[in-house]
Length: 74
Image 1: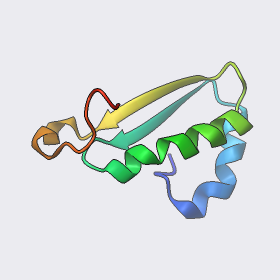
Image 2: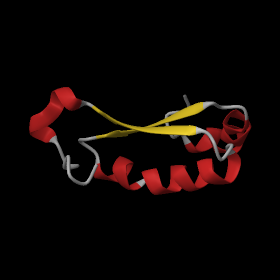
Image 3: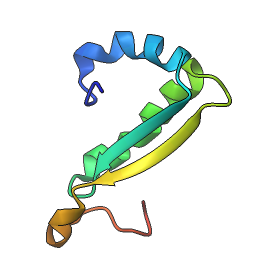
Image 4: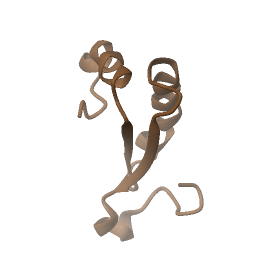
């Protein structure tokens, strides 16, 4: 878990190489975190096994009134 922090970007490739599964999480209250998914998936596709399982997770569902990412978009 690097929480998307830029300072950990150079070590994430090492973690991807041996991974059987990867969770990509975004906040339903933060459109920018949702838009970052494509960058994360590109990085995963470049570094992880082709057989790795990827799971997209929307966090903060308890904050439904503040939702900025629609269920349809997610």
